Image 1 (cartoon, rainbow, N blue to C red):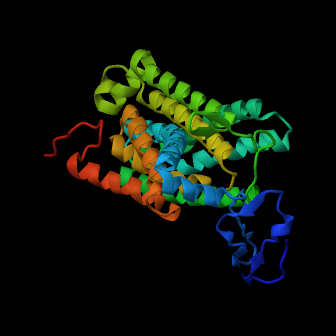
Image 2 (cartoon, rainbow, N blue to C red):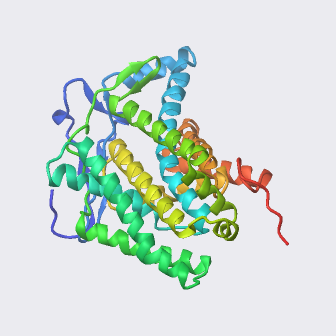
Length: 359
């Protein structure tokens, strides 16, 4: 619906227009969104089967089975979110470990993956699976070029890590508004796998796409972890992370290793964006929205440690979803950040981080 002027509007959902045996949750069918000039405003109504509210009250009166069912469902959703955050956090942690750069533009790499997959899927008509493969490959190439022609030049000029961090904030803003111009201010979705009926696995209801996505995420995380431990490039990357000067004197091409890390990090971040786009609609701020959670996962697990990023991200994802059992959904990120603060007070180096002597 298009309106002429910006302002506050009253939107009423006609219950007669709903499918049979469906009602608005809580009975509130009125919303009052604020519409700004040039922007779109979404109005959401939570629906449920008729009589579901009464059944839920009966379950609460009769016992705690509904509580544990909801807890199991939220735990599954937390693992799903945690694995997506872990993919993005892994790339960020690898880049920080090898270069010392706290890259605030990493969230835009997540958005880039989702937008590229959307372009191949909807724009060029490819099925989502080959579109996702093309998007990950192209994002990896762009990540290589980003370090080859931008960050590598700054390192060669002796730019400090604090200055590069500030530059990354500018890069993030530039890319975000480029996405706004080239993509759309509206939310979009892929052509396939947008709506799937859930399958029941015990107390959990899960869409098949989420199960497949979690399997892919686990596989990628395991493969990258094994590569870091067993391959020559992985060992070289760990050597560069420990001591770049010593690694260079040992014959390791430090710049080459860093570019490989940037390539892999950008590709993994793009994959995280694609998986996030499967769980929710695509929008140009989707990377910005989870950037704080990515940093929380990296910091909680231990800065610069790949496996720490995985553990920290899973903890963050679980606490975000499970905390909604006790707090309103609008405050669900507070629980994860509270855990981050508590853990860092007890263990400042993070869960898997190493203590470092200063001075």
